[in-house]
Amino acid sequence: MDKNVSAVSGIIKHRFTDFFVNEIDKKDNVVRLTDIGLPEDELVESREKARLEVEKLDVKSWPEDATERLTPKLGPTVTEKIKELTLKGPSDEIVMTNPLGDDKEARKEVHDLLRAVLGGRFETSSTQSSEISIKWCRGGRPRREQHPYDKEKPYIHFVLQKSNRDSSDAVNHLSRMIKVKDKLMNVAGTKDKRGITTQRLCIKRGNMTLQDVWKRVNNAGTENQKEKKKVRRTIQEALQERGERGCRIGNLTYESENFALGDLNGNRFGIILRDVESDGEDTINASLKVLAERGFINYFGMQRFGTSVIPTHYIGWLLLNSDWEGACDSILRLRPNEDDDCVKGRKAWLDDKNGKEALKLLPRKMVAERAIIEHLHKSNRDFLGALSRIPRNLRTMYVHAYQSYIWNSVVSERMRTFGLKVVAGDVVSAGEDVKRVEEGEEDKYSIYDVLMPLPGHGVLYPTGKLGEKYKEMLEMDHLDYQKLWRPQKEFSMEGGYRKIVHLPKDVTWSVIQYASDDEQLLKSAEEELLGLDLETVEGERKHTAVSMAFNLGSSTYATMLLREVLKGNEKRNHS
Image (cartoon, rainbow, N blue to C red; front, side, top):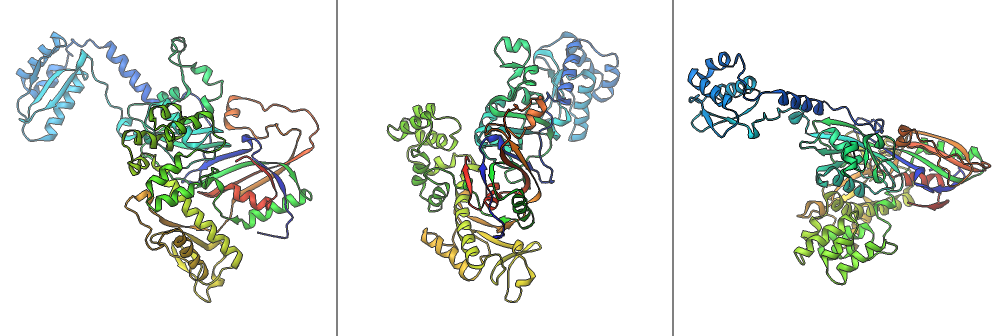
């Protein structure tokens, strides 16, 4: 953004502990892991209290005030029958009340009265003739009364810190530990693999409590459960050791609402840039000051397109052309530098069409491949059906990657042609509206107002050379820019808008000296909460690093910000 500032060179992500990401929620709160203990749980306490009351209850006892309370509503005959049913103890006998008419509220009062007087030891149900049948609960023990949370708060939210793990891999691991289907577990955003990332997760809890989720994820329980190998460790051990498989959860709460992918305002990054070389500390400060004040070109990062020989956006192009078989083949193709199990699993399907063996070999983290093979193994050549088995957030990723590829190309063309000035025909945000800049209006807007559309149906394209660029690129890919809707919604291009220059918020930095490339320079929240110290490395602190932190909006890439700082002088990238 300023060619007069000298370049800085350095190494990004030398260690995964050099890259921290904390989600920013819709209320602009930075999501942090602050409590990893077994949560206090009102629901558990309520259920335990009810259990103890049931154990104390003599189910064959007739409460002293029962006759007095029931007779006015049910009459002496029915009340006496209920008393006899109670004193005999659990049986299959049924007592019927007299018909109560069509008054639904009156029937509800009777249900509530019986439950209040007799402690829930009987099941009651209304008949078509408006009577109420009364019979013993199974086993003769009262049913557990519903806690208000069971209706009002059907979700559990918690904070996940994952270390050096892919987002989908972490979600699959958690769903197995918690014993819920992964489609019942939602995230607001996917996070980088190589790094320490913190985000919110949400599950539909069913009958689970906060403590159930905590114990399952931490594989923790009592000493007795550990001895019987039902859990791997005790609760106390879980509070002294790192999380299972790089995942640590905390800050669990009951909530009334779910959230979905995209329900976030961005991310806060904490990054160590190692082995920094520059003209001096003044140059580093000047470069970061320009970044904080002027921002950077908001390109989609390489993570969007994948690092495989088969880019994600190519699969997206196949889907947009309804080439279902080609998309499946591209996802399943062999890739260089994969683990042996991945290669053997792919070959078991590609060479022998042995779905059972392929699924046995393929790691669970290969979600898309496993979904396709599992379906094709049962339904040969139903390629669209196989693609539909991939979790929705992964299915939509392919088309989004193709949109991002087009967007990056058009923005590069715009920067070459017009630079940072606003020109007639640009698309800009004007309050809540989107419009084109007319001749003579250029001075009303700045580069921070300029939007570039993600191609799709219903978007406003810029005029002139850039509008033609969209049309030309799509036509080269056998797509009509006016016909980007598909019957399969997730394989359609709905379009959208993205600012071409992004201004980071709350940018801070410091220059530090360190002794060794293997020295950890940032501490995670889990390490803080466990009281773990960073290993002290002896020796001369002759290496320079920059520790920087900043907030970026949703779907904005820190790697693109760092590219602005390094200006192509990145020594090595481990992403």
